Image 1 (tube, helix red, strand yellow):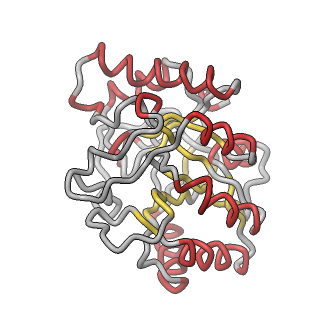
Image 2 (tube, rainbow, N blue to C red):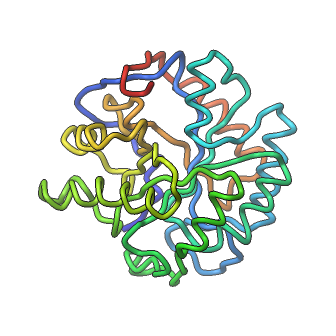
Length: 260
């Protein structure tokens, strides 16, 4: 199932637990590698990521984890900060993304699959097999100053699971990552970016401080943050265009108690 659904129109029945000020700009990445076969458009090369990070810094912007971004906004200090997220927990994050992020004095949130440590992305049936982070890789990312969030256990569409499986994906993944890293897991990322009210409520009740979606529509809020897809085709001029479009589209939101 393709992941790049960021161009779809926002959908959703209602909004709760909102954000301070205007909706923040949160960029959505996946894999960082040299890859010629990429039918789902989930890979950026290290050279392209470097170009994008250089563009950010040249505009007076700095990429940070989502937890840092939201904390800064609550203090009124979020100006110039952009959230950087990497979905699926690909193994190339440690070798290819972290050195560039640190070079540009940026941080990021990497959303990992607790039930697939050291496995592969076999949910992308038509794409090349990519190794996922091992437990050692996740610890290395955390030690390098990156935020580790949950992407569930197995990368399943939570809007199509029963209540028991949904609870396991959301709660067990949090507990397992916290045991692995020794740190609180604050953020969740919905597989495929798909959300509905029961799933958002399950994430909130599990104790997550925030959650990332793609285009959640009227569900947008601290537990369904919209994000901007960033891919290999996004040269600096496209990044600038996406930034301007986001500034036009973003909505004024408030922050709810669950985000504190």
